[in-house]
Length: 337
Image 1 (cartoon, rainbow, N blue to C red):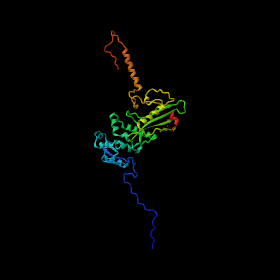
Image 2 (cartoon, rainbow, N blue to C red):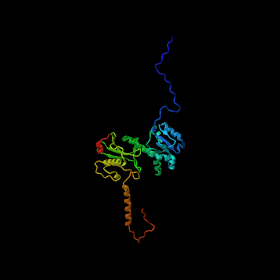
Image 3 (tube, rainbow, N blue to C red):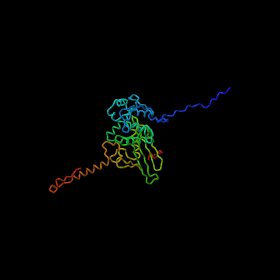
Image 4 (cartoon, one colour):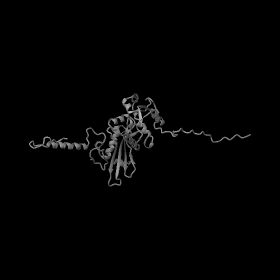
């Protein structure tokens, strides 16, 4: 009787089907996981209309969800400037959910998240892409949105060294001043010729916003050191008090007097160089005038006084047509210096 063929000890495997043409077997990075989005308006790419279905495909292929109408679970409304100004039903529904539940942002937020530097995909901070902020910049005549967002992202990158960059960015106030302040000290008779503190005030991406202060210390030919003692989420007055205290500790002058000529008794203080005249310098005390402006006014006043002291002889031959027109390894001793 013939023996039955011996069963193979190796289990049989079915051949894996070939992936469809034009697709990759590698899953896409789910940067939109947990987010649900909806659209309002007409969007363009390379002067051509970009269908909502195509944008929805980008979102779903990267872990997100898409809803045709804004609903209770919507986290983001991608909106055009025109629809936002018209206050469409989609916009009003998003408003009714509140800013904490649903953010209204421009399409560039999705594009920049998917097409980051060097082809990296990363969920960008929303605060630089909101319609409120975009319209505020347009109203002020500022159209350099790409540079603004690049600067915003740079603030996010800086935050990685001192706190969670997924949650914070460098704070920028209503005047356009960025709270990234450089304090320097030059030592001519020292092995370390240059020392620098970079002082930051961070703001959270999420609302209601929280704030925190941190600093980076660098020296010539030495590793970086970080000051994280006050890198704890606080309300604005508390975090700003930490910021001003650190500034005064290192420079010997108060933050509100930062634009005044240097006059301090602190031993070997760090120096702060204010922005040039015409650039944002941050919020100033009510009625404060920069010293450069005061000097200009002083010159004008002196000119007026000289003009008043001049007495013309009525008998002299003066042409009546001639008139005068008025016209960083955190070392405590370094931190406390």
